[in-house]
Amino acid sequence: MPLIFCTPNGWDMSEHSLLTEAAISAGIVPSSDSEERLWFVTEGEASVHYSLAHTKTAEWLKQDTLFAVTDAGGSTVDSTLYRCRSRTPLALEEVCASACVQAGGVFVDRAMQTILENKLKESSYGDSDMIAAMIRQFEQKTKRAFDGTQVSNTIQFGFPRDNDKSHGIIKGKLSLTSDEVGSAYTDVTSSIIDSCKELLGALLVQHLLLVGGFGESPYLKKQIRQAFEKQGTQVVTIDEPSKKAAADGAVIWYLAQLVEGRAARFTCGILGAVRYDNKRHKDHESKCFTNEAGEKRLEVFIVLIPKNTILTNDWRSSWSSQATYNSAPTASKLGKFKDELYTWQGDGPVPYVLNRKGKLPSGLIKSFRIEANLSSLCSSVKSDTSKVSGEPYWVVRYKIDVLFRSMKLMARLRWIENGVERTGPATIIPSVKL
Image 1 (cartoon, one colour):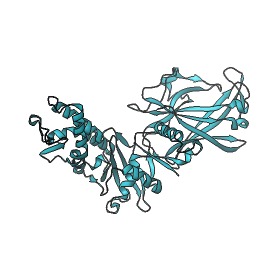
Image 2: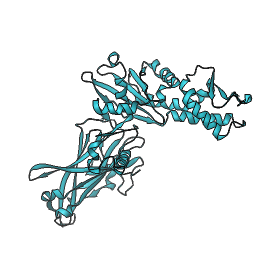
Image 3: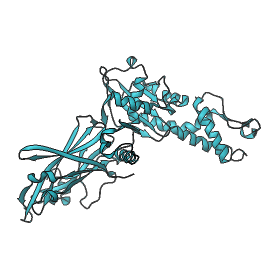
Image 4: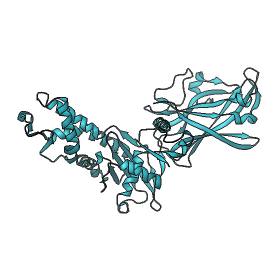
């Protein structure tokens, strides 16, 4: 039986690896079977499946329609922009990297707690226990009904004997103005709207689907509509309660698999050495080095996956590599290939030429490690003579493929043996342990 983890848009292989280890440690799946039985889907993608299952898509979803899905949950708000590639059968594709902001409903509760602490600091009802009781009632009732039009909003927290008229407490009810309640939403709604505007950019997006537990907030719906409908984007809500949109959507996703292309969130690549080009690299000649073959080389960041690349199940990127030895290697001596994948998370353009002294540009993050056993390549080892030292050396050449399959980045080893292409397994491991 498969196990589906539905995770925030901002999570990647590091968090997935942690969840995989937890599932194995808990005895839910054996290590040998985890690759096949554990599936990961973003909350945004799960939500789009849930939304399309519970809206009248025939009325608005056409081929090439651009639409966004915003899943406003308890802590995170995930937004994704999609294009409808096909109506029959239904197929979707991400347009660009999805967005994830910490601006869920819990932050409204925290803002309200601060408001109440300041409002009641001179009241006998301002202790932590009373404030906690008020926040519970606010979350369960007041927040869910608030749409900004109420003249007065009450939090029922106590008994008829509880009174402090100077602070708005009468018979166990605290009265708040709409401005007071609305101020608890200000930072959260601004963050959500800014995130959506950045995602949509200048594109003509016809529809924005708002789902999630916090997405049911009348006030948030009103603010989203005011922000986007004036620019021609219709805000669509669903008839069914959407608090479990991610959970239910994950099951629908597993069965339907409507999304065929997903956008890379970061530029990803490797550190490699390219042949020095006097025209292109003239300003960086001081950073060059000479390899055993006598070639002048320059260490650069080689991009494998540009940001916003649409990754489909037939996507592949490859690079050539080699290992050199001072003596003819046996199968056991060939050892293990290791290479690092980096993501560019900095501001400005992606760096190209790197510093040979081991310093990486700020923003270039070591994110994943690829490992593969080279022992199968023993018969592909070639000998040569170093043009630098004149000494013999042995080299084995191969390629590494990075593939996107079943929502996961995967890798494999590829080499030529006696004129025939061979492939072998490789593993992608997160470099950062959580």
